[in-house]
Amino acid sequence: MRYLFENCALDTDRRELRRRAELVAIPPQVFDLLNYLVRNRERVVSKDDLMDAIWKGRVVSETALTTRLNAARRAIGDTGEEQRLIKTLPRKGFRFVATVRESEGPAAAASADNPENLPQPALSFPDKPSIAVLPFTNLSSDPEQEYFADGIVEDIITALSRFKSLFVIARNSSFTYKGKVAHHQQVGRELGVRYVLEGSVRNAKGRVRITGQLIDAASGMHLWADKLDGTLEDIFLLQDRVTEQVVTAILPKVRTAEVARAQQQRPDSLHAYDCVLQAQALRVSRRLEDNEKALAQLERAIALQPGYALAHALLAACYTDRYMVGHDSGVESLRAKAMRHIQKAIELDGDDAEILVHAAITIGIFDDSERGTALAERAVNLNVNSAQGWFVLGAGAMYLGEHARALECEARALRLNPAGPLRVQIMSIIAMTHFLLGQHNEAHLWAERAYQENPNFTIAIRALVLSSVATGDLPRARAAFERFAGDLPKQLELTKRMMKRPEDFEKFSRAMRTASSSG
Image 1 (cartoon, rainbow, N blue to C red):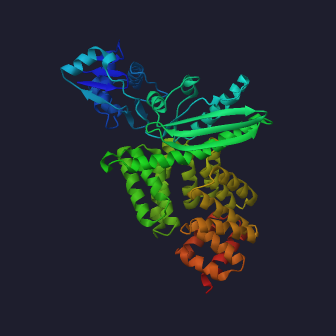
Image 2: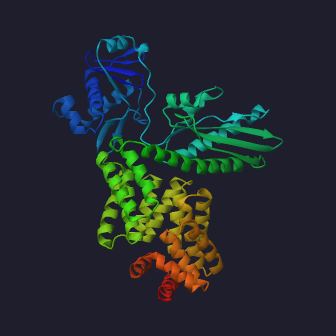
Image 3: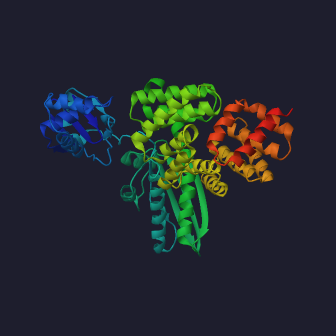
């Protein structure tokens, strides 16, 4: 049998490994280890599995296993840092994740004898969105502006790399295309990415125009394009502004494209990552039936990949959603499930900003709002471009009574996320903060905006109830409260635990009770 992947051919009959035209010298145990991983690529292989298969149950040190594993990676052009082909799953084991074709018979043997005749398959895609940021073209007459264009690209790469949910090609690889004409499909194939970001910089008489476009490398479809104008009076400020705007614009486009791709897959071909994508899309509606579908997808993801930290974090988020919107009255059961999964997610990957944001919400609601706020602060320190992190930090500050800070954080979140479902939640927190500050007209303005964009979001309804009572519009407050369809005592109990200032809770509870009793 011959296993073909990337530019390699693993021949189990001849016990040979070839990379392109070269025969790779590989020790017998390293060959056996690689062969075992490739043959069992559909599952996670534990250390015990490898010990039994390679050493036939003999007791050997973990150092010996690590040494053989590193040798296998080197032989096929992988590294322990990249883990592009052989992935380590902490506390679980290892998995061969490259796309593999199996071949046998005389024709395949002829091709294997001359690897130059082997088809060179594209690099396999990572199990998350992958993107390469190509060097921006300098359209200015001044070659000195080259450094400015390169600096923008480096900043964008750095900013995108802070999102652990993205696989971002390093600068050294993407800059190999500098000054070259390369088709998007070629870049995607050679770098193993689904998406390519390219752009240009033009500087004329101190005015700068920067254009960017995000492209699906496989189809060539343009997912996003825009132009940004500025001056060189403060070159570093302009660079920061461009980076922030580009990152903010393309992340939702990548997420939308990934969800659409996952939804086109056959149900029996979904991988753990695709299940998580489906669950994330289902969570948006907050409907009970979608919540249950999301839970099912996440349970499947964990069955496929038990060490998937984000799947555990999203399971906690779904249980928290059920509690917040009144889908389930069993608060202790929901709390136990949510806390179990969020603790598991933190244990698996406690340095991921996205996971810390989910932890901040779950722990802030079910356990300790101060600890939740501290986790949100850690998240934005890890990734300053996380709109959800700033939103949760702002909400936490509001509950702690730090109203000025809450408004600052929500303004930052809104700038990073000017569209989409999160925008409704941001505006609702802004409205509630203005309500607590006694700024009732501002509160009503923001609450109306949030409610008009999505009248089904519980947080938007709650903000409208508070602001309508504050501005004396009791019929509107009552109508909104009836849409709430929540358990008022439970909501007051939850809010009392989260709001640290008694005077804030008094304002909140008085307004909610007024709305519930007016008619």
